[in-house]
Length: 180
Image 1: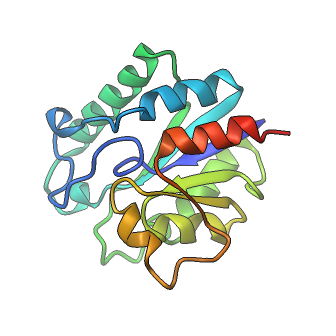
Image 2: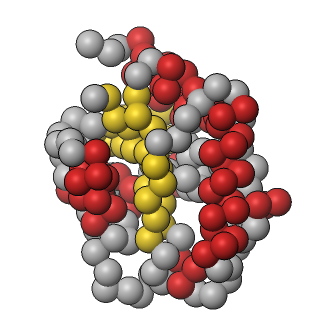
Image 3: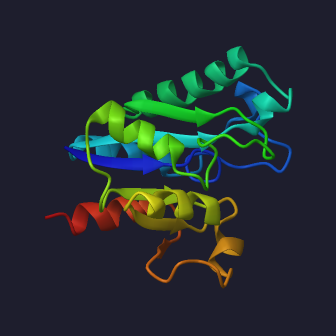
């Protein structure tokens, strides 16, 4: 099985320093939904792993998070793409949970749910914590320069094996051109 793990805010949709708190605030990054459709069409299982501390902070509730994610799933389906699963951490940033990236808990849940090893599975994020969580379980890290990605690309702590691309569409093109 081919699997790819995507962060949500800043990778699939525009990010906001004030959080994405409603379906109306969720706006896809141009080309991201089509990239999901191309990956899906090429046999990838597309999984989202996202920190959503706005739930834990009381900025929005689970029903709202579900509505936002439902909008994303339907938007991907409208262009022929499928998101196979969404994993999220609802805990605030000061939580000691194991699921909040950069900790690997969500990735371990994905491995268990899909019964796969995550070694060399591509993971796409726009922040250092996305990259660190994927590397902790052996994923191949891809940084997109959307969302917080341009600033992250300048971070000296960025692991040198991180592959940097302008956006999710460019990552998808790369993966599909270079697949085994």
